[in-house]
Image (tube, rainbow, N blue to C red):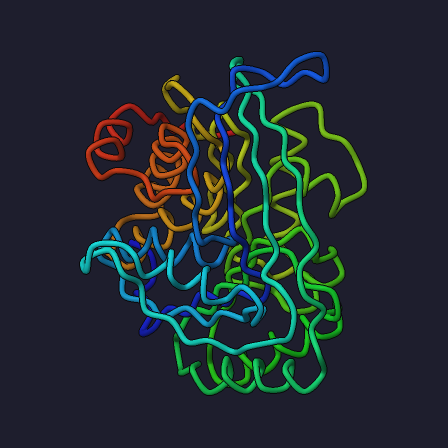
Length: 319
Protein backbone atom coordinates (compact mmCIF):
# COMPACT_ATOMS: atom_id res chain seq x y z
CA UNK A 1 0.00 0.00 0.00
CA UNK A 2 1.09 3.59 -0.49
CA UNK A 3 1.76 5.22 2.84
CA UNK A 4 -1.49 6.98 3.75
CA UNK A 5 -3.57 9.51 1.90
CA UNK A 6 -3.41 13.29 1.98
CA UNK A 7 -5.51 15.33 4.38
CA UNK A 8 -6.05 18.04 1.78
CA UNK A 9 -5.20 18.58 -1.89
CA UNK A 10 -4.48 22.05 -3.28
CA UNK A 11 -3.88 22.48 -7.02
CA UNK A 12 -1.92 25.74 -7.35
CA UNK A 13 -2.47 27.56 -10.65
CA UNK A 14 -0.11 30.50 -11.08
CA UNK A 15 -0.72 30.75 -14.82
CA UNK A 16 -4.15 29.48 -15.96
CA UNK A 17 -5.14 29.38 -19.62
CA UNK A 18 -8.12 29.47 -21.90
CA UNK A 19 -7.61 26.45 -24.17
CA UNK A 20 -9.20 26.75 -27.60
CA UNK A 21 -8.99 23.43 -29.46
CA UNK A 22 -9.82 23.43 -33.17
CA UNK A 23 -10.09 20.20 -35.15
CA UNK A 24 -9.42 21.09 -38.80
CA UNK A 25 -9.50 19.57 -42.26
CA UNK A 26 -5.84 20.54 -42.62
CA UNK A 27 -3.56 23.54 -42.32
CA UNK A 28 -2.17 25.14 -45.44
CA UNK A 29 -1.23 28.63 -46.54
CA UNK A 30 -2.48 27.74 -50.04
CA UNK A 31 -6.20 27.60 -49.16
CA UNK A 32 -8.86 28.47 -46.60
CA UNK A 33 -8.79 25.90 -43.79
CA UNK A 34 -12.03 24.67 -42.25
CA UNK A 35 -12.71 24.00 -38.57
CA UNK A 36 -14.58 20.70 -38.21
CA UNK A 37 -15.21 21.03 -34.47
CA UNK A 38 -14.02 23.18 -31.59
CA UNK A 39 -13.92 23.26 -27.82
CA UNK A 40 -13.12 26.07 -25.38
CA UNK A 41 -11.96 25.09 -21.90
CA UNK A 42 -11.02 27.02 -18.79
CA UNK A 43 -7.75 25.24 -18.27
CA UNK A 44 -4.11 25.45 -17.27
CA UNK A 45 -2.39 22.40 -15.80
CA UNK A 46 -3.45 22.91 -12.17
CA UNK A 47 -7.05 23.62 -13.17
CA UNK A 48 -7.05 20.49 -15.33
CA UNK A 49 -5.76 18.47 -12.38
CA UNK A 50 -8.47 19.89 -10.14
CA UNK A 51 -11.17 18.90 -12.65
CA UNK A 52 -9.91 15.34 -13.03
CA UNK A 53 -9.55 14.78 -9.29
CA UNK A 54 -13.02 16.21 -8.67
CA UNK A 55 -14.62 14.05 -11.35
CA UNK A 56 -13.17 10.95 -9.72
CA UNK A 57 -14.34 11.82 -6.22
CA UNK A 58 -11.12 13.33 -4.85
CA UNK A 59 -11.88 16.52 -2.92
CA UNK A 60 -9.63 19.49 -3.66
CA UNK A 61 -9.67 23.28 -3.75
CA UNK A 62 -7.65 25.04 -6.43
CA UNK A 63 -5.99 28.40 -5.91
CA UNK A 64 -6.05 30.30 -9.20
CA UNK A 65 -4.03 33.41 -10.03
CA UNK A 66 -6.10 35.10 -12.73
CA UNK A 67 -5.63 38.05 -15.07
CA UNK A 68 -8.50 40.38 -14.28
CA UNK A 69 -9.21 41.52 -17.86
CA UNK A 70 -10.71 38.23 -19.07
CA UNK A 71 -11.25 36.45 -15.76
CA UNK A 72 -15.05 36.75 -16.05
CA UNK A 73 -14.99 34.68 -19.24
CA UNK A 74 -12.63 32.11 -17.70
CA UNK A 75 -14.73 31.57 -14.60
CA UNK A 76 -17.97 31.63 -16.58
CA UNK A 77 -16.72 28.65 -18.57
CA UNK A 78 -15.43 26.96 -15.40
CA UNK A 79 -18.83 27.42 -13.76
CA UNK A 80 -21.03 26.56 -16.74
CA UNK A 81 -21.06 22.81 -16.05
CA UNK A 82 -23.45 20.47 -14.23
CA UNK A 83 -23.40 20.95 -10.45
CA UNK A 84 -21.67 17.62 -9.85
CA UNK A 85 -18.76 18.69 -12.10
CA UNK A 86 -18.09 22.09 -10.49
CA UNK A 87 -14.71 22.32 -8.84
CA UNK A 88 -13.94 24.44 -5.79
CA UNK A 89 -11.48 27.30 -6.12
CA UNK A 90 -10.16 30.49 -4.60
CA UNK A 91 -8.99 33.40 -6.76
CA UNK A 92 -6.26 36.00 -6.53
CA UNK A 93 -6.44 38.68 -9.25
CA UNK A 94 -3.58 40.30 -11.14
CA UNK A 95 -3.84 43.08 -13.75
CA UNK A 96 -3.76 41.87 -17.35
CA UNK A 97 -5.08 38.88 -19.26
CA UNK A 98 -5.24 35.15 -18.64
CA UNK A 99 -3.21 33.66 -21.50
CA UNK A 100 -4.91 31.84 -24.37
CA UNK A 101 -3.66 28.65 -26.04
CA UNK A 102 -4.83 27.84 -29.55
CA UNK A 103 -4.50 24.10 -30.28
CA UNK A 104 -5.00 23.15 -33.94
CA UNK A 105 -5.53 19.42 -34.52
CA UNK A 106 -4.69 18.17 -38.01
CA UNK A 107 -6.39 15.26 -39.82
CA UNK A 108 -3.39 12.98 -39.19
CA UNK A 109 -3.55 13.66 -35.45
CA UNK A 110 -0.74 16.22 -35.52
CA UNK A 111 -0.99 19.19 -33.18
CA UNK A 112 -0.04 22.83 -33.76
CA UNK A 113 -0.13 25.05 -30.67
CA UNK A 114 0.00 28.85 -30.60
CA UNK A 115 0.32 30.57 -27.21
CA UNK A 116 -0.74 34.14 -26.55
CA UNK A 117 1.14 36.07 -23.91
CA UNK A 118 -0.55 36.37 -20.52
CA UNK A 119 -0.15 38.75 -17.58
CA UNK A 120 3.04 39.79 -15.80
CA UNK A 121 2.84 39.03 -12.09
CA UNK A 122 3.05 42.12 -9.89
CA UNK A 123 4.99 42.03 -6.65
CA UNK A 124 2.11 42.86 -4.31
CA UNK A 125 -0.11 40.27 -5.99
CA UNK A 126 2.67 37.70 -5.69
CA UNK A 127 2.77 38.25 -1.92
CA UNK A 128 -1.02 37.89 -1.72
CA UNK A 129 -0.92 34.71 -3.80
CA UNK A 130 1.85 33.17 -1.68
CA UNK A 131 -0.03 34.05 1.51
CA UNK A 132 -3.24 32.45 0.18
CA UNK A 133 -1.40 29.23 -0.63
CA UNK A 134 0.41 29.18 2.72
CA UNK A 135 -2.85 29.73 4.60
CA UNK A 136 -4.43 26.79 2.81
CA UNK A 137 -1.67 24.31 3.62
CA UNK A 138 -1.91 22.03 6.65
CA UNK A 139 0.03 19.02 7.91
CA UNK A 140 0.07 16.20 5.34
CA UNK A 141 -1.62 18.22 2.60
CA UNK A 142 -0.48 18.03 -1.03
CA UNK A 143 0.14 21.26 -2.92
CA UNK A 144 0.22 20.59 -6.66
CA UNK A 145 2.31 23.24 -8.45
CA UNK A 146 1.50 22.59 -12.08
CA UNK A 147 2.10 24.60 -15.23
CA UNK A 148 4.55 27.16 -16.55
CA UNK A 149 5.22 30.26 -14.48
CA UNK A 150 3.87 33.66 -15.56
CA UNK A 151 6.29 36.47 -16.30
CA UNK A 152 7.44 37.96 -13.00
CA UNK A 153 7.50 34.54 -11.26
CA UNK A 154 11.11 33.35 -10.97
CA UNK A 155 12.82 30.16 -9.93
CA UNK A 156 13.70 31.88 -6.67
CA UNK A 157 10.00 32.62 -6.14
CA UNK A 158 9.21 28.94 -6.81
CA UNK A 159 11.67 27.83 -4.14
CA UNK A 160 10.30 30.37 -1.67
CA UNK A 161 6.72 29.21 -2.19
CA UNK A 162 7.75 25.55 -1.85
CA UNK A 163 9.60 26.34 1.39
CA UNK A 164 6.46 27.95 2.82
CA UNK A 165 4.45 24.84 1.93
CA UNK A 166 6.87 22.32 3.39
CA UNK A 167 7.41 24.41 6.53
CA UNK A 168 3.73 23.82 7.34
CA UNK A 169 4.01 20.07 6.83
CA UNK A 170 2.76 19.99 3.25
CA UNK A 171 4.14 17.93 0.41
CA UNK A 172 4.76 18.97 -3.18
CA UNK A 173 3.68 17.67 -6.57
CA UNK A 174 5.49 19.52 -9.37
CA UNK A 175 4.71 19.40 -13.10
CA UNK A 176 6.26 22.42 -14.78
CA UNK A 177 8.68 23.07 -17.60
CA UNK A 178 9.63 26.36 -15.91
CA UNK A 179 11.68 24.65 -13.21
CA UNK A 180 15.30 23.50 -13.38
CA UNK A 181 17.07 20.46 -11.95
CA UNK A 182 18.59 22.74 -9.30
CA UNK A 183 15.08 23.88 -8.33
CA UNK A 184 13.88 20.27 -8.01
CA UNK A 185 16.92 19.25 -5.97
CA UNK A 186 16.38 22.23 -3.65
CA UNK A 187 12.67 21.63 -2.94
CA UNK A 188 12.60 17.77 -3.20
CA UNK A 189 8.99 17.24 -4.27
CA UNK A 190 7.00 14.19 -3.23
CA UNK A 191 6.32 13.62 -6.95
CA UNK A 192 7.27 15.09 -10.30
CA UNK A 193 5.71 14.26 -13.66
CA UNK A 194 7.89 15.31 -16.57
CA UNK A 195 7.46 14.15 -20.13
CA UNK A 196 10.54 13.02 -22.05
CA UNK A 197 11.19 16.45 -23.55
CA UNK A 198 11.05 18.07 -20.11
CA UNK A 199 13.34 15.44 -18.58
CA UNK A 200 15.87 16.08 -21.33
CA UNK A 201 15.52 19.80 -20.67
CA UNK A 202 16.08 19.29 -16.91
CA UNK A 203 19.14 17.10 -17.41
CA UNK A 204 20.55 18.65 -20.60
CA UNK A 205 20.96 15.29 -22.36
CA UNK A 206 19.19 12.85 -24.68
CA UNK A 207 18.16 9.31 -23.75
CA UNK A 208 18.26 6.34 -26.10
CA UNK A 209 17.00 3.47 -23.93
CA UNK A 210 14.66 2.62 -21.09
CA UNK A 211 17.72 1.54 -19.06
CA UNK A 212 19.22 5.03 -19.36
CA UNK A 213 15.90 6.54 -18.30
CA UNK A 214 15.64 4.19 -15.32
CA UNK A 215 19.12 5.17 -14.14
CA UNK A 216 18.28 8.88 -14.34
CA UNK A 217 14.93 8.51 -12.57
CA UNK A 218 16.56 6.42 -9.83
CA UNK A 219 19.11 9.22 -9.43
CA UNK A 220 16.24 11.67 -8.96
CA UNK A 221 14.84 9.39 -6.25
CA UNK A 222 18.26 9.42 -4.57
CA UNK A 223 18.28 13.22 -4.22
CA UNK A 224 14.96 13.17 -2.36
CA UNK A 225 12.26 13.13 -5.05
CA UNK A 226 10.15 10.22 -3.78
CA UNK A 227 8.14 9.49 -6.92
CA UNK A 228 8.90 10.17 -10.58
CA UNK A 229 6.29 9.62 -13.30
CA UNK A 230 7.81 10.00 -16.76
CA UNK A 231 5.17 10.13 -19.51
CA UNK A 232 6.08 8.79 -22.94
CA UNK A 233 2.94 9.51 -24.97
CA UNK A 234 1.64 6.42 -26.74
CA UNK A 235 4.56 4.44 -25.33
CA UNK A 236 3.05 4.63 -21.85
CA UNK A 237 5.11 5.77 -18.89
CA UNK A 238 7.98 4.87 -16.61
CA UNK A 239 7.65 5.12 -12.83
CA UNK A 240 10.48 5.03 -10.32
CA UNK A 241 9.99 5.25 -6.56
CA UNK A 242 9.23 3.18 -3.50
CA UNK A 243 12.01 0.76 -4.38
CA UNK A 244 10.64 -0.13 -7.83
CA UNK A 245 11.11 1.06 -11.40
CA UNK A 246 8.49 -0.13 -13.88
CA UNK A 247 7.39 0.55 -17.44
CA UNK A 248 3.63 0.78 -18.02
CA UNK A 249 2.53 -0.28 -21.49
CA UNK A 250 -0.89 0.97 -22.60
CA UNK A 251 -3.30 -0.17 -25.31
CA UNK A 252 -3.53 1.69 -28.60
CA UNK A 253 -6.47 4.10 -28.72
CA UNK A 254 -7.81 6.71 -31.14
CA UNK A 255 -6.22 10.02 -30.20
CA UNK A 256 -8.52 13.05 -30.42
CA UNK A 257 -6.41 15.43 -28.32
CA UNK A 258 -3.25 14.92 -26.29
CA UNK A 259 -3.65 18.28 -24.55
CA UNK A 260 -3.98 17.74 -20.80
CA UNK A 261 -3.15 14.02 -20.93
CA UNK A 262 -0.18 14.48 -18.60
CA UNK A 263 -2.39 16.33 -16.11
CA UNK A 264 -4.74 13.34 -16.10
CA UNK A 265 -1.79 10.97 -15.60
CA UNK A 266 -0.65 12.82 -12.48
CA UNK A 267 -4.25 13.01 -11.24
CA UNK A 268 -4.64 9.27 -11.71
CA UNK A 269 -1.65 8.55 -9.51
CA UNK A 270 -2.90 10.87 -6.77
CA UNK A 271 -6.39 9.36 -7.04
CA UNK A 272 -4.87 5.94 -6.45
CA UNK A 273 -3.09 7.22 -3.34
CA UNK A 274 -6.31 8.71 -1.98
CA UNK A 275 -8.07 5.39 -2.58
CA UNK A 276 -5.38 3.52 -0.66
CA UNK A 277 -4.25 1.46 -3.65
CA UNK A 278 -0.91 -0.32 -3.87
CA UNK A 279 1.98 1.44 -5.57
CA UNK A 280 1.67 -0.74 -8.67
CA UNK A 281 -2.08 -0.05 -8.85
CA UNK A 282 -1.42 3.70 -8.59
CA UNK A 283 0.96 3.46 -11.55
CA UNK A 284 -1.57 1.48 -13.60
CA UNK A 285 -4.30 3.99 -12.74
CA UNK A 286 -2.04 6.88 -13.79
CA UNK A 287 -1.41 5.21 -17.14
CA UNK A 288 -5.13 4.49 -17.62
CA UNK A 289 -6.13 8.09 -16.80
CA UNK A 290 -3.61 9.54 -19.26
CA UNK A 291 -4.56 7.16 -22.05
CA UNK A 292 -8.30 7.68 -21.57
CA UNK A 293 -7.80 11.46 -21.64
CA UNK A 294 -6.48 11.48 -25.23
CA UNK A 295 -9.72 9.87 -26.43
CA UNK A 296 -11.60 13.15 -25.83
CA UNK A 297 -11.44 16.50 -27.61
CA UNK A 298 -10.19 19.53 -25.71
CA UNK A 299 -8.86 19.30 -22.17
CA UNK A 300 -11.69 17.33 -20.60
CA UNK A 301 -11.27 14.81 -17.76
CA UNK A 302 -11.22 11.16 -18.88
CA UNK A 303 -14.42 9.16 -18.72
CA UNK A 304 -14.73 6.61 -15.91
CA UNK A 305 -15.83 3.87 -18.31
CA UNK A 306 -12.76 4.44 -20.52
CA UNK A 307 -10.44 4.43 -17.50
CA UNK A 308 -11.92 1.17 -16.26
CA UNK A 309 -11.58 -0.52 -19.63
CA UNK A 310 -8.01 0.69 -20.20
CA UNK A 311 -6.90 -0.09 -16.64
CA UNK A 312 -7.49 -3.81 -17.26
CA UNK A 313 -5.22 -3.65 -20.32
CA UNK A 314 -2.28 -1.77 -18.77
CA UNK A 315 0.76 -4.01 -18.30
CA UNK A 316 3.65 -3.32 -15.94
CA UNK A 317 7.19 -4.54 -16.62
CA UNK A 318 10.22 -4.15 -14.39
CA UNK A 319 13.09 -2.31 -16.07
